[in-house]
Every structure is written in structure tokens, then in C-alpha cells.
Image 1 (cartoon, rainbow, N blue to C red):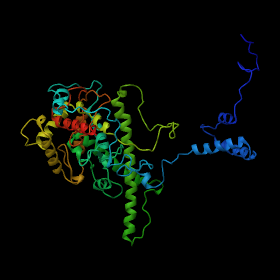
Image 2 (cartoon, rainbow, N blue to C red; image 1 turned 135 degrees about the vertical axis):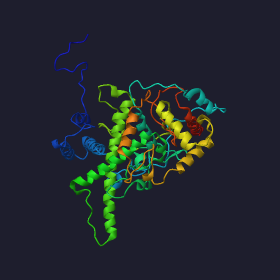
Image 3 (tube, rainbow, N blue to C red; image 1 turned 30 degrees about the vertical axis):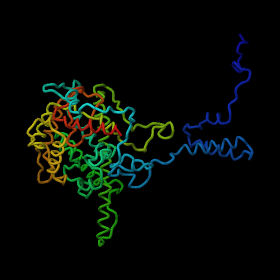
Image 4 (cartoon, one colour; image 1 turned 90 degrees about the horizontal axis):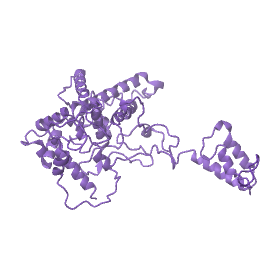
Length: 475
């Protein structure tokens, strides 16, 4: 045993360790910690550095520290910029990232998250046989969701899937919608899509109108939700113009005798109102997705907790090597396309709706059970069905509902459809499923997740998915 420790003496060493200059400066606030500008610390440090002689090592170290501190206090390169193209969402989802403007934009390829590590066997099981043995739901086999989740949860899921997946029919590696939750089923994925649903005046949409034609092949409740988003958009645009905070949406001065100037002023007002309302509606859509839909999927809504997994929360380190990146964009993957599906959760009510849609509207002359459809018959039926849909989105109807002279559906019809959907019991809902054979396929609602739970009418749809997955991972 050594001599006992005496106050004032270094512990366990005869030489007390000395901190260096940089260690001392880090301890008082430099080196990544926030700096209170009101204490003028940087200015004092600059003054100290400037007073040191030219050959001072401390001067060199202090200069390096100042440069590093100033550089790390700003984003390099910046993640956001001024201008309408950055203030508003682009129709195709581009410019979410200035560094990679096309990342996640409509018309770009799916990402591939998992590399093809194993070679597929030469002789693969028949996809139809796989469906019959592993996926097919037998009559009378259905389990309601014990948590009381209704079909509405999966109707919202249907909107999400059609928001981020639209596989190109010309090239299955391409998604014709953006990778972002920008409510493309309502607004579309191009300027042409937007013009088709807008009045081009005061930021308004045509009455009860939405873009996505594929959703006409979904249960009526899905389309009712989009009609409500459309109405909310018009309410927001109307309120923005009436309030007109700070004159933001006032017409720009123009020469009354110059038609071009007048048209440009009204077009600018419509542009600003439409895109601002779109941001508001998109924000509500995100909140519903994160605070209602996601909580329902994770079963948190049955607890007293207010928690949800919200990626928008503030995080101290938001850029740099150790930070969570913001403003860099993203790209949906082929794996996500294949896995995010809810076919096993289809309710009995919606299973009957699918059967009726297929037999009466899409394949009325097929003359055989729906689970015996082949690929050619399916594609021909879908093409014929789509050709019967009006080109003008404001003329389209669904679920037996008719538009009035003002272009709107009756409130009572919409409410009745919502009520029936809310009372339609959903199935078990783990973190699971959806799919991307989006053409008249992703029917949402309620059932029990697990094997042998997919309605037989969707046999050809699941076959297409299996074939596409094999093609993607054979490359």
C-alpha cells in the first residue's frame, strides 16, 4: 500500500495531468456545443487569437478551431432554398432534395434494398399452385379484428399504397408516382394531372373530384375519403383568400387594358392559393397517417399513451455524420412494393363487393369462376373497364352514387357509405402488408392476417405479384 492520499496532492500519480488549449476551449463551449452569441465568446476568441505572435502554435490551433466551428454551424450544402419551386411541392415530387432533385420523383426507378444473394432455382413452383396451397381463403373462414378496428383503417392504407406506388405498364422498374406521401391520388403526379382536376381559379378543385382512376376499382369508402379531402382543399383555399393575411393572396397590380397582364395576375393568385391549400391538406393527411393510421396498426390507440412514431420531431443533430438527415429525399423500394399489402385483411363485406365488381363490371362475360382467370383475360378485362371510365375526372362516379347538377355527390350518400365502412369490422392488423399490383387490385378492409386468407377472386393478382418478384430478383 502506498502513502494515504493527502488533500491537494494528485491522486495515483506523482505528476498531475495537464489539459491542452483545445481541451480547455471545448470545456467552455466550443467543439460542437451550442454557443450563446450574447456572451460574445467567438468575438473574444478572435481577439485573443489576433493578439498572439505570428509563430505561436496556439494561434494556429485557435485559427483551426474558429474555422471548424464556423463551418460546422451551417449545412454544407444547404438543404433548403428560396423560391416558389422550393416553397411549394412540385407536381411530380421532384426538388424534395436540391442535391439530388429527381430522387423520389415520379417516373424514376424503384430502389433495390436487398441484393440478390442466392440464385433462384431453375424449376420454380407454379404461382397458381402456391396461391391455392398457401394463400387462398376458403368460404366461411374469417376472423374479425379483436381490437375493434374497422375497414376505414385499411381504406386509408389503400390511399397510401396508391400514393407511393404506380408501377409503369411500359417498364415495371419505374414508378409513375412520387415516393413521398404527397396525396397523389387526389392531386396527381404531373402538371397535366393537376390541370385536369382544377378550376384554375382561386386555387379551387373541381367539385368532389380526385385524380386516381385506379381507385374506382376500390370499395366506395376509399373514394369517399378522397372526396372529403377534395372538399377540405376547397374549404382551405376559400378561407385563405377570405382572410388574405398580409395581402398575400391579393391580385398583383396589372394594366386593365393588357389581357396578358390580367391573366398573369389571376394565374399567380390561383397558383399560390392552390399550392398553399395543397400544403395544408398534405399536412392533415400526414397527421392522420402518423397519429391515427400508424397508432391503429401498432395497437397504441388502445392505451392511454399519446405516443406515435413521428419522424418530424425535432432532433438536435439533424445533419452531419452523426445526425438524422433532413431534406435529402428518399426512394421507395421494390421490396416495399411487394411487402406492403393488406389482401388477407379484406372483410367479408368487401370480398362480396370484389366478387360483384369482377363478375358484373370487369369480367361480365367470362363464364367461369374468378379464381380461374388467366393473365390475358385479366388484362383485357381491366383495359376494357378503364376505357369505360370518363376521361374528365369531374365526370366520374362510383359506388352507385350520382353527381348533382353542381357536380357534387349528395352528402347523405357519402355519410351512408362512411357509416357502413366504419361499422364493417376489420381483421387482425400487425405491421404488415400491401402490394403493388395496383390496377384494380389493392382492395382494403378487414380480415385475419396469416396463411390462406386472401379472397379467391384475387388469385390472378397474387400470381402477377409472384411473377414480378421473380423477375426483379432474377436480375
